[in-house]
Amino acid sequence: MRRLFDAIPVDAQAEERSWTVVRAAFTAREPRVRRRRRLGPAVVVFAAAALAATLSSPGRAVVNAVRRSIGVEGAQSALFRLPASGRLLVSGAGGTWVVSADGSTRRLGSYSQASWSPHGLYVVAASRDELATIEPSTGKIHWQLARPTISSPRWGGSRTDTRIAYFTEQRLHVVAGDGTDDKRLPPSRRVVPAWQPGTDEHVLAYVDVRGRLTIFNPDRGVVSRLSAPYDGVRDIAWSPDGRTIALAATHEVVVFTLSDGRAKSVHLAGVRELAFAPDGRLALLHGNGVLLLSHGRVRTLLVAPSRPAGIAWSPDGRWLLSSLPQADQWVFVQTRGGRRVLAVSHIRRQFGGEPSLDGWAPSA
Image 1 (cartoon, rainbow, N blue to C red):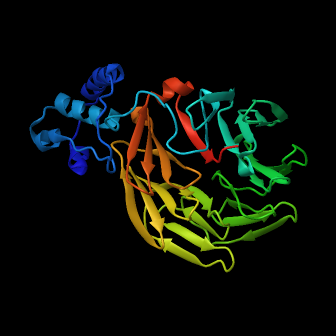
Image 2: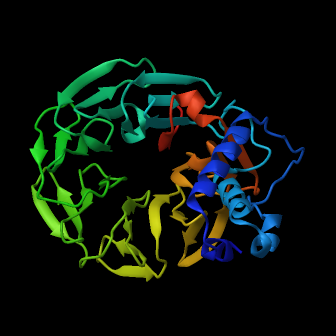
């Protein structure tokens, strides 16, 4: 049905007028809570699709506007608590925040990007020209580093010996966890780098300018290529045990075994984000869906009514969180022990803007 909708030409001015009316009505509405104990994956079917052929251009514009804006029905009006233990890190235009399991929040500052340190002990956060490390429980800043156009900070290593990777306008950098010994790496694509977990060594994966998956050990200064070039690499992610690494390219998802460099491909075009669960399942954002790749098989976990953004696994791997920016909602999907879907509205109001999902760490 959606393909039929997309094929129908729409008057742009009529669509804009209709979208303004629908957006105002959606913002003012009160969410209707459904009294259900169990919910399946959220799928919205528009009855108006059956009448698409008879609608006028303004009528089609209304349907398209509703399709873009609507979220999961029965959503809570606010984030009252997390469905699992741990602490959620988010960041965006409204700053960087830590959300506790009981729903309480702490703003750590006006940083637009952030990530957890190993074991969730600290947070590394970035504004446009500043990198900082912060205690999540108190907001205390340990050190700051000024660099131009900072983005994508990522922290790796052990509890006592860590490294932080980040981009500046011109190059990927690695700095020690205490803010010293800042090094520039060879030129690379602006794909968010990833540190290998489960090891006391500092092993960073990134994508070089030719699209090759590259492994770098900053302590030894050794760079090795793990793959041939791939077109349109969007994301990379390590498995929790550090034995495999996944790559999302234009036409496929590739999983590499680090010990021998072997690669297994799943031909799935358009995957834009990857995230491993603690038990090794791989979540994929694809179109309007969240998919799971496990043992070479792909299955659908969630089909959302609008395009999801971001993935965060709960520390116990029983819940997966994604965002629906068009609907101003978060959606928690139970992946073990049931198939509940919990939606929360008014996310931008709670965090001062649309936040990205930067990780769900264990409780302190």
